[in-house]
Image 1: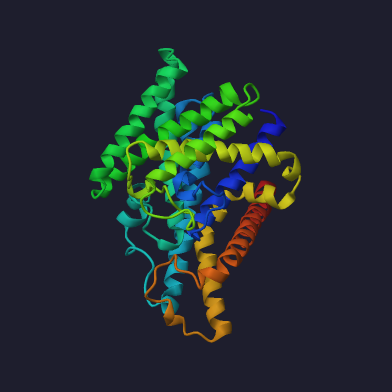
Image 2: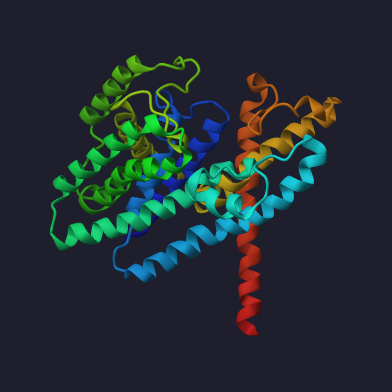
Length: 359
């Protein structure tokens, strides 16, 4: 894999996490392409771009446990302590009661056992999706299924997932819905890497015009927000909530395309920006910590303005102070602080590993 390809993936990861954080602050980073219409599948797409089938099944599981699950459960332990320590301030425990079931099983079912790291629900789901995709991919390779047949198969699974959304009140069906839906976009990432990247130009004026026109048509199905709000066309994958049988698939692909297009257009201008590269390298830590930082910002604002802390006690963990004026301040501080939290964690890890290797 070339250095350019690696750098472009890193910048795509940076854009993806910026879109996630903007969505949690309820604004759209890309006009016409609201975050909840594609933000999570963009990460599945990136995972597909990075998918490597050279490992044995046991090796692949081991690698995904190390890269996804171990950091997840370390963060969970840390945030149990943080959540307990915040009880005197927020007046409640932000999450489900601490138990073996909630801390071990629920990450794979809802991922919302602790409110402050709820955005990390994606990680256990990514683990499930990648492991099962690995199995399917091996099967397809053995019987030599062409890409077109695989695409049709995964589209059918995505359509099935949308239909299963009507049963999403049963939380134990949620992993099934999310897995069936995610396969299509992992495959899309695999296909893009193998057959499109550096081989075909999908960023022509004609394709750009088609995507913009399609997105404008899709806005006609918008049921819950206006373009001014910037969060229309949403579907909530974590809870299996879909308002339309086909629009979620289409908006996922238009969102992925515009993200690739932005990286392609701006790559030469931002490829050497140290900070934006650090953002791409710390998406896990940004995902894990930005809600905590948002809440700390809120309580700091309360403190300097003399506002009683209990003003926020009846609100949920996503509530933030005066969105009309403070949204972008939250965004900038949140990205900056969580990026360097990630850098600090990696620095400590390097020191520990260096010391351990000497012993």
